[in-house]
Image 1 (cartoon, rainbow, N blue to C red):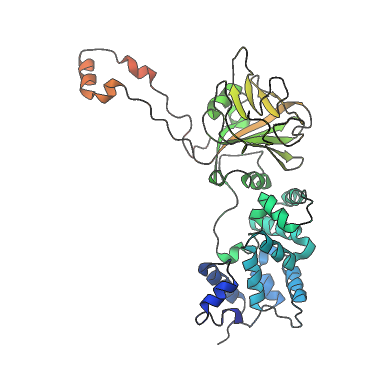
Image 2 (tube, rainbow, N blue to C red):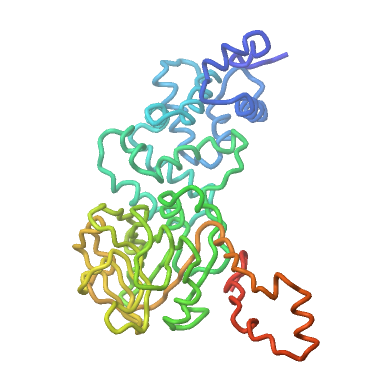
Length: 396
């Protein structure tokens, strides 16, 4: 019976194998072994086996095969399975392990290889491929380990090349409840990687100017108190940009949120602009006030020096490039912009429904019945809190 050397002694030396591939658990090792056996029964992997095992790598499967063979000084046309599994193990490890694996497999072409894998797995068009590559190439660090540590999106994408071999079903894309014309797949990837983990998986459309009209009051009503959210704008000049509100927007004279909030650019290029910590005024929503700003914004200012602000008179906004509240960015390409399209998405679960204090009549049904029999009007029912604006999963 033909076997593969890396797994020859799984029964007799299980602990030794586990120690050698310490970043993989038993189920992952078993999944890798099963997938390898589907493509070969030989004692090693050929270039053709590599291509069958890693179809979403495209031409980079051959690149990786040649690089590993050269680095290991192999003179045969087959690569030991242990060498291959070692790379899987490294990519599931810490940043320095991941950097080693990417260099072993792809050398200087690791960014292009990651993008090719992502776009093949997610079936993204070429324009998205270019946008993702440009985003990854913004980091000019010469140290790959540092780059993986500092770039949150890259930290997620490095797990994708071998994801299918590990039988991992975890998605890197959010599940959208609603239709979008502003959030491209790569934009979703970039934003998702920068928001807290508990808000990454389910996004619910709260407001869309395409669906709900050009109304600030309509938007404010749908957004108010709905929890963490994304505000995305396309200006009439074609720039697409927005913000993540870590605690959402609550109508009133005070600010909400914290330094987890950030600004982002989506077009003409993708960028994440984090809070500097110099300003504690984050998310703001108010309207119809005489002495306070009327509109929605972030990084508040007493004048018109907001990093991003939408006027209560729907249609116009401010985006200042030199605010101290966030990293320097020119979101709209101009300080005063006009809105073409606007969307607001709640991220994560819906807010808990507030439990209001019961009326004395609710607590005493018998008293309520006696009043009704006597023909007394139930005045208190007119002052109950309205039902929540949106239920979870509603698709407007």
